[in-house]
Image (tube, rainbow, N blue to C red):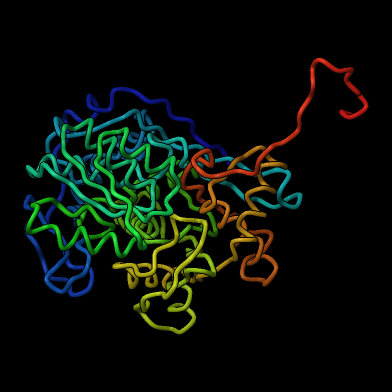
Amino acid sequence: MAFLNIEPEDVRGLYRQSSSFVTHLQCSMTGEIYEKGLPHGLSRSGKPLLVRYDLEKIAQAVTREDMEKRTGGFWKYREFLPLQHPENMISLGEVMTPLIPLKNSVPKGVQVIVKDEGRLPTGSFKARGLALAVAMAKELGQTHLAMPTNGNAGAALAAYASYAGLKTTVFCPDDTPEINVREIELQGARVYKVNGLINDCGKIVLEGKEPVGWTDISTLKEPYRIEGKKTMGLELAEQYGWDLPDVIFYPTGGGTGLIGMWKAFAELEAVGWIGSKRPRMVAVQSTGCAPIVKAWEDGVEHAPLWQNAHTAAWGIRVPAAVGDFLILRAVRESGGFAIAVSDDHIFQARDEVARKDGFLMCPEGAATFAAWQKALETGQVRSDESVLLFNCATGLKYPMPESDHHIDCHQPIDYGLFK
């Protein structure tokens, strides 16, 4: 299987001839139609809105071969994105993130590939969703954006919004890694630590909409972050030669990327670029915060609030997801499953991959490797299946074990230590 390496270029130039193929927005629960080109939050039933396109016209406007010739990051998929006016596009030098086969941390002959989203601006896959959300906010005339975050989303919002000239206010749990908090502030946002979890931060954002007048950019509470995250599925299909892996393990908090990829695969099949084959989608959570896993095991469509949520994989510490039913539908429709792994296993997996393959995964990404190991043992995946793991951010943003080896250069050195 040949993987493509795409070089960045001035993607705004690529976007210059585009026009939006959006037809309308639609409530993901009831199917109610909403007009395009207007600011929207959740639907009247309190559920996420999904952007819908004239896929027949997209199929007439562009081919797979056209797409393959384009360079740059996710903006190359402009026909599948909602932005109407190219001057509102915000790019910080996005790239097509690489696929890296693991060699020494998996059994010989087993194909496990990591898509490394840590190569994107601000070091995480949050760049995809927030680039689109900020661009659409700019297009719709919204000037003050607010969100709750466990770290990486806030950093991406701050960076893209500052580049676009928009104001941002961000709230994060007070145990968010300090490097994330400082990154958010330094990149132009006003960030506040909150003595609670991300859902408590989200409540502050929601209740501040009327008195402050900001736009809520929380996960799935506006329609466009999912369109940015959708590009993971578009990009993956192209990298796999318009085929798809057998199984995708995805670290699941709010689940926007899993939902977005499932949407991308449907749109790609509709325009004739892929067939009906789908990966089995696996939602990965921590045993300390596993509402989606419990809902999947219980056979229900909505996950109750997870009490006393805790995990050091902060990105998947989401006690309640507004798009829970969309995550669970994708998992079930694909024949996939939801799985939880302990924090001990997560950090053991991170250390194993780093030491054996030189790949420093973030804790949330390491959770997918731990989940694959567990699923292989239980028979939920086979050793002959092609597996894709998402490393959603660079591991450099997270605490690492100390290194305490010292040499006194003023004393005789015992070189036998190094053998």
